[in-house]
Length: 195
Image (tube, rainbow, N blue to C red; front, side, top):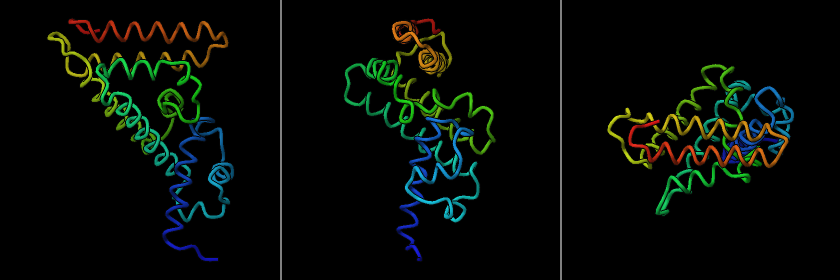
């Protein structure tokens, strides 16, 4: 049975969306094509009509995940009198810690992405740059720090805190890690000297 172009595009988008969630949950190598396609409600047979390879899908799914993460940050900040505090409160929360398949792709896939091809790493690079731009716009400027210097420190601290908090089996310690990171982000943001 032949599928219309519109249905084929809808199927393709469904696979990218499903892969975006499933890769964050299982890692790039932790899930096969059969389960990725099953997650989108399709069979493996149509995969190569839609994608050149698993790396092609990983790159597109990573771009989707990073774009979604950037939108989440912008949404959290929008209309808030203290946009940085809104982003910090959302990102460094126990709720976000629990969001394995829908949470931050940097925290979920960062070390995994570092071992992937340039094709898969490129969307992360673009997403990191977008996150840095958002952070840089939210923080007070300091005379002694380079442009984006504080944003780089803050992003690294926030992502690292979520990764470490997810490792912890002690829920109280996990929460303390997130709280300590949030306090440090606020200190860095308000510092006139930079990190």
